[in-house]
Length: 188
Length: 353
Image 1 (cartoon, rainbow over the protein chains, first blue to last red):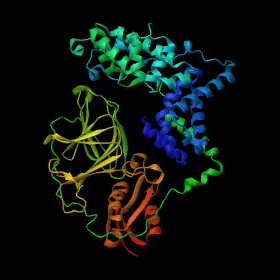
Image 2: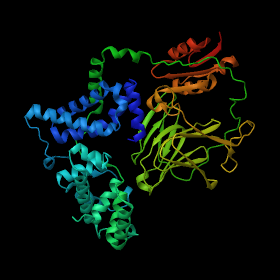
Image 3: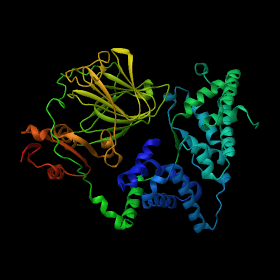
């Protein structure tokens, strides 16, 4: 969602506009659910966590305008509540990034839309899903959810440098997967 | 991985932290290594597309329902403020001399036929609105009584739509495939954007409002002439005027028929813009003559409104309509300015009190 639009919704929620909360829910609940799932691995619990996050935002609406980056804030809230649940249900309090599970991540467009062969698209999708778990999660948060590198670092408790390293690993693998595979036209 | 390998530099470019010197190094490396350069250009295009997670679908509606119940259970003493949906602000009867708000009485010419095949069409009935997602992921909110036609993007690789009526676009930007809206006789081209276009057949003016990004307005008859709109600007162009004839609004010459104006839009009540509030199912009006407001209400409620008194038709109102019925809306308006209304079927006649 566009940054300006988020600010606009934030302002309306602060003013007690429930329809703005609903809109925010429609925009973000899917992504926050996915994040909760990587930690808690239970759909009903992940749904409850997402509800908790939005409930918290609603209850804090009088102070909402002080939050500079509501998106990053919502992600961190989701992580914290998920880890709380994890502790309550399993006694574990560690969220091991090397073991996170994420469903396959795919480029949504068809080969025709991209004007490439189905073969090549498959190669790219394979390369994305071949990335190590931590690397793939970071790649997903940046490329699909649109988080900034520094927000990802904050969310996953990593150094900014580490996020950069993981992204360069992802970029290296994706480039290597398609090197010398491109049709002449795409090579200019 | 060395500190400034090509991959590291790519990541730094991606994060926005790259320094000018590093950028130069990266560009040189990409030039010198042709296959990597080609792969890079190619991946940039692919990864600009939407990614999706292949998961079991969620029931978002059920999720919201459940959340909604908890919201209300926890609402407590703060619940009361939701009752005051109507904000009838300062609708002091500002009477306006006729002429100032006169519509341009231009005959609306036939909508130019476009030479691309529109294979899909979506329409909304008067009184209803809908949201559509186009094949490229672009979201479109269609206001009442509007029609949008578009071609099969994936087959043609061309993203063009034709609009009759009013719509708000949140465009998935793709440099290689510009998104073009044909409306009236003009073209609006996105440069990464959320924008609104209003161009009902029979309207005497064309309006486009930009919320974020940039759009370019062109006239296919005069392709080299372009108007670039900045965020939170609204352009109003009389239908039938070509951009060539258009001049900046002369301050006090209202006889001028071929003029366009660019104005900054202002948020009113609770930060909503009157131009785009309908996207959130809200009709917002700010110091608007009843006659103009009536045209919007006609579309909103699928009614016909006529006036038997010009003073009341030029009285200005401000307010917000969300879930009100037409009767509730009329009654609320009567609070600020007394008038009579008589409703028969779908026709409403408004007269002096």
